[in-house]
Amino acid sequence: MKPTFIIPGIAWYGYIGLRLNLGAFYFRGDIGHTLAFGEQLKLGFSPIRLGVGMNFSPHYYIELNADAVLQKFSETVGKIFDFKIGYRF
Image 1 (cartoon, helix red, strand yellow):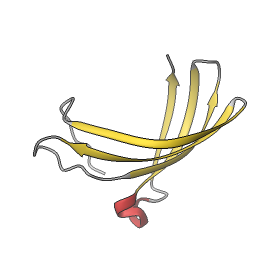
Image 2 (cartoon, rainbow, N blue to C red):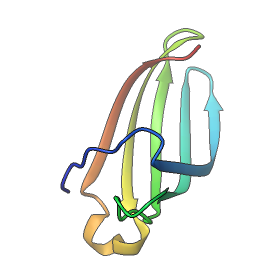
Image 3 (cartoon, rainbow, N blue to C red):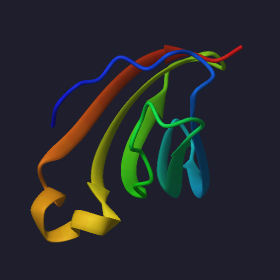
Image 4 (cartoon, one colour):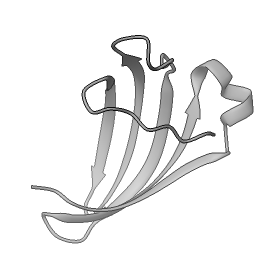
């Protein structure tokens, strides 16, 4: 995938999903859609994401997700992953 610089406020990503908490661990899944204002960007794809995470405290967590793009599902399934280390406010 080719990275692209996006001017803040031009591109938006909306999603809906579920999260199943099992103590310190959790499973999550969501589906979303991207859109852009103006002609600068050609967005409009719909990612689907499935993942697992672990809470270390009420605020700190790690998470691993497998992502795919619905419009190119067979080309992207099993090829896009993201790993997060974060802090929730």
